[in-house]
Amino acid sequence: MKGTVFGHSEYQKRQEELLDKLPMNSIVILPNNVPSIRSNDTKYPYRANSYLMYLSGWEEPDSTLVLTKISGHTNVTLFVKPRNTESEIWEGRIVGIEGAQNGWPINQAFPNTDFELVMKKTFKKISNLYFFKGINLGMEALVSNLWEGEILDPTPHVDKMRTIKSAAEIEVMKSAASIASEAHISAMAITKPNIGEWEIQASIENHFTLNRSVNSYNPIVGGGDNATILHYNSNSVRIEDNELVLVDAGCEVSGYASDITRTWPVNGKFTKPQREIYELVLEAQNSAIGACQSGSKWDSMHRAASEVISRGLVDLGILKCSQQEALGTNLDGEFRKFFMHGTGHMLGLDVHDVGGGRQGGKAGPVLSPGMIVTVEPGLYFASWREDIDIPKKYSGIGVRIEDDVLITESGPIVLTDGCPKTIDEIESIVGSAL
Ligand SMILES: [Mn+2]
Picture 1 (tube, rainbow, N blue to C red):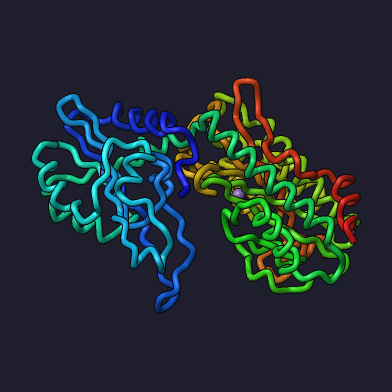
Picture 2: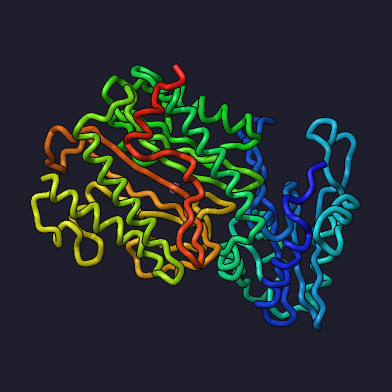
């Protein structure tokens, strides 16, 4: 039976760090995600809650983690589903109470049916109740029934902890980054004119599965104009000769995500207008990666990318205004018509991980060693948009380039640097496996 991803001390350190931040006589309650039904007795693939994985390594549903700090003593308890031969025959083997007690970084395990009774007793001894809301509404109702006081939110504390990756987490994320890098290379190598978007998706997912990983989000494979739809994922169209394809696909290894976007010409040769846009996005991305320095403001990478993009749009004659108007006073100028998302986000147990901020906004953490962020500027010129007036040669072009970047004392480290992105490298790989 599968145990924890990391050694127990890693989780115990996280539990202690959280409890240290809370006042005496506190309890923290964290239920697991509820299995989601597709229809009748068919379920969607189950994914445990990221907070629960982070604090305990536990993944089975119908379980709840409880941390207490009462009169100087801390305690970590898991309420889990007891073993049951009949249900295990259908649903698979489960860890059970004894297994949890012996194999997980906790002090004690109880059957989940005891939760209410144990809480009733424990609530008499505590003054502060922290509950992870929005995960399991049934548990939420039960707890608010039992507790008359205010329900406090523990996520700001844990989110801050989750932004700084440990050495062990970084190793796992490097592995997710390199599997996804290889997947993109294989997909480039089988690309040819008239390929179906789904065929590129299949190639990528095949590589993920062969390497015992899964999608960390639904892959986006958009050819031609579909590349300009930010969350396109029907991946159902054939891509014509002379079109670009934008592929945004990452995998999850032991719960940790990678997130890569590459854009390449299906016939292996960028046209001049495609090359002009691609080079501009690549310059913006390199500038933004350079801005990923320890101690920099959260939006420094977005500012760096936006400055390059704004200048380039004016130089290419796409924006007919001054560079200053293109950029705007608050990174909100004309360039936003074509680069409408942020430059990056936190990456970790979730692909859009906790603890970041909106880019272009004022709030957000200072970049610090151990943070892993994505850097992903893009430019999108949808041919169907009636609100823009651009040179025809750029119509239908969408380009995004995305890497995963670790912040260190000595500068940014690109974890996805195994995935080529220069024009020469890409042109030499596309179609090379055919
Ligand atoms: Mn991303």
